[in-house]
Length: 208
Image (cartoon, rainbow, N blue to C red):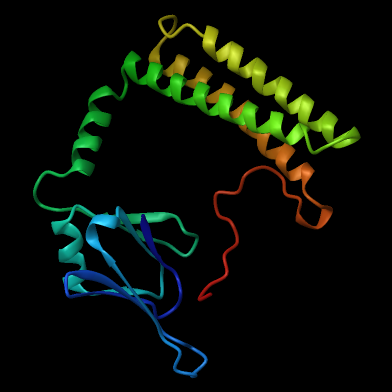
């Protein structure tokens, strides 16, 4: 489970061996919200601007290998708290660096994208059950593109060309599928809610 502190003035503390979240009532009615969680249930703590965390809570997170990530105003990770001793996160980074730039990394990336495409195609198949006429045609066109990208990616040789060339081909195919998928989802929404593509910096309501 993740703890996400986003409301202005929200605080993370530790009390009686538990993470304690305090969310103030900014209306002045005195209806402060307080919740507690045991450390073993928390995998990640996300902190947005306007929130605070005590040093005791940070130490408690380090002791229990809880990932602490600080976000910027757009919700993009800006940094994280790391222990001085080896941790699971550091081991993951070490292994990622070890395979980066190798053909094994290309195989891993391709398998991950192929699996994502299969999940997206399954989701589009479900959407077809609830759409007719023009919107059904949108789904079928997008599904055809995703299926074609899946086939081309599965056939792509990872040994021909340089690492950079093969990586560029993988990114290009993933980009083609991604644009088609997110454009389709935008077209299926009511006109007032339609969007073009996927936003990396979505609109957020602060302090709510």
